[in-house]
Length: 226
Ligand SMILES: CC(=O)N[C@H](C=O)[C@@H](O)[C@H](O)[C@H](O)COP(=O)(O)O
Image (cartoon, rainbow, N blue to C red; front, side):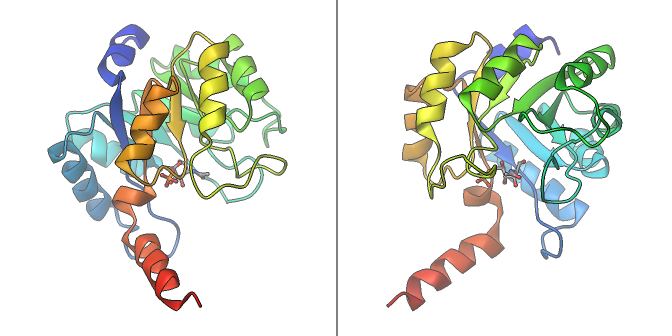
């Protein structure tokens, strides 16, 4: 799908992230495919999914674009950290490859611009996962097709928040021409709508829809608070 067509498809819509962390009972390809099917049934516009095998299974099972990534570890640059990871995700059938576009060095020494070029040559689009306005501006200039607030709050120096970084959505939307995606800690339909009102093109929701372990833990914590 062209960047133009996908942009039109996702405008004002919900992208459902169907992921489960290592060790979680939901971390099972068939289970994640069922989550993706539920996201389709509920009206989601696209699926965000982790690891080539899961991207391939969900792409085969649902008729929605898949935004694929490949997490390798959980510190430093871990979301699709190298060109090799990015090409494997594209090869698995992702319409869009999401990758870390923070200003930290990548483990293979590549630049984000090189990753964008390789993914475009493979026929897929790129979503830049950023943590700051400056990173989003740079990623857009380097050819990213979408810029997402995914990593705000997860990179040292970025604001720690329990909710989404709506100020980053606002500032990115004012600064760049590529579509801005609001992602990270969106916990309610009202927060999702607020992100759109602040200029987001689309909204990604993961935990609040697809993570029963984390959601259970939130309720348990709520019961045990003094
Ligand atoms: C920081 C990081 O690694 N984010 C990951 C990116 O794919 C996922 O673990 C998140 O679930 C996703 O961004 C959606 O966010 P939330 O689950 O908060 O709705």
